[in-house]
Image (cartoon, helix red, strand yellow):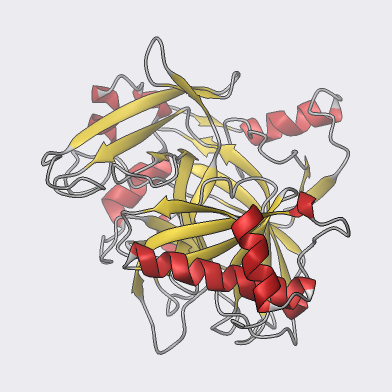
Length: 390
């Protein structure tokens, strides 16, 4: 089924509802269709770019993995390069073993039973939590003709909220201060989707900035099934603030079909993700997949927005993660802007912006941002020449 949608500007918020319609316990609501009606009536945003959704992947029990990124799982969908795919995801908060189940967890926090996502209840009831991580991951999507050594381009075209709330949970002896915070504590936070904010209290609200914490290709066959928590060269739980609508990511392909997975929806997250979790919620992102054959082999994922190019450093030691991010940034400038390593190193000291992505996912993350505006001749990623480290 193809679905025509307006492409939102970077950072815009999708309406509540996604794909074939959000299914709550109390009722089924097809708000995506309502959004189409608004578009046809000229009441949607003023963007003129559009796309058609070629395939919708639902977050049904057979389409998800709980706790792992598993390249041995049979693909849930096969698509051609340049396909637009909408992928439903669900949050793990409310269904983990230290929580009472989604109905009790959310109704105890004041969420009406009619707003609890039916898919989340089904996963809780039917899917074994047989991976080492907490996340429920949807996939894999198989991209035809993708082979190890290729580059997969993934554009984040849209993100829809499936529910108007999320949860933040700190857990015993985890997070950035494990010796000080020695108890579990969950807070369910409601959204005002009309105003685009999360309402923490009567006096505190934070703008919503949704993105997928997990975006990944399949690891190598020798790596096999991996814990959903630590990110790696395949991407995974990269948790980089700002990689929402309008972001394009480039992944090295390690397995036939590339095998794209996504999950761990975040309504918003601060750099560092210091108490262990972001504002976790159920989202439906829409991606366009473009395969690049005969590209120079790359080591790690790279991302870009209209304003910045992102590189990643991931290591169990934060200092080593910073060194890796710096090397990746130098390599990017060497391959993409024809700089010498010395020129790139100097530029990064003057204009690079390196931030802690997260410190809580076993492998810690640093992301470096290079502003495009500093280049008078422009800077758009050429996926054919990303290349290996300098």
